[in-house]
Length: 466
Picture (tube, helix red, strand yellow):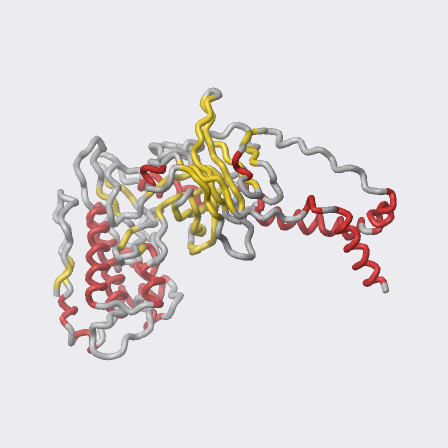
């Protein structure tokens, strides 16, 4: 009886509330792109919003205000965003951003846009009819519970702001400014990977997918170091991850540090090898481009095109997880959080010996007998790359016989989670290396030779030959 009465009361309350709280469907938005010539899109028009059925679509607008002069940047459709729910007008509420951003629901609701730092003034709804007062008071406990649930959901959604503006001037430190061409709305979409220093999100920045690496406050030093490495002159290379920008988010204990780079849908070499065997030509191409990227990272590049000289950089955490793959299987090196520069006349900074991933540590690192010189650190990277090449060979289809399931180096000998002592015993004392199986040696790839790019010229090509 009580359940029937409660159902009736809820239905009556819903119908009495009228259509003002119903979800407004957004199918079309006005479209504009100030960079239409560069991005090869239409300059203006109408954009039809096509999203998933269980997600809502919105319209958005972004603009600049220079001393009262409004410059429209972009308009179009926006993905499902809690901050846009039930907004019938496009109103930016941030105090004084460099780029204003607003979103709303309803067809062409982004035709007009405005900025109200204190939020839009919304008139109170007319008082409810007296006959409904009893229902309102009787439903008060249910209403309070609903508000608590909505508040909890809102707080969950705002742990990671779903969109923002990439601001590289908030905490510049000692690094030069990031090469970001203007501030752009940034929306986090999904977590793609988690690691020692945080997680990596797939995000959308205008019409481009990007990767956002989020560091917690305790790993600020790693974020700072990676940003400085990417900001080093001469770090633009086809086999190095393209850096877009960096910023600080939040305050006090909720502070996060974001690093924005290009996004590669194929993911890391580790992930690719887990689900795919490679042909001989694919093995050569991945190996060649990976070697070229590491050779360029190690290289001293003289001053060119207005940029200062690029010093030699040791990666210090080279592994298949830190090698990304482009659509054509070209390798791209990333994750420079432990990298160290060797600039003439300057100390290299933190050169603590035992850093990186244990499985890929060279024997001298495991033994604690490293010579803290430039060439020693570069050789450590080369040892790690040899292990990654073994991973590639183990998943190659060119050999006679079946292709085994993907395994990490030394996984067969000491498992997936070896201790430092396990690796010291295996690699240093027993001097073991990953095993080459007999069926591999029947094929010419036992003679794989990756010729290093000639020093002093980053344009020379590495060659993979049998």
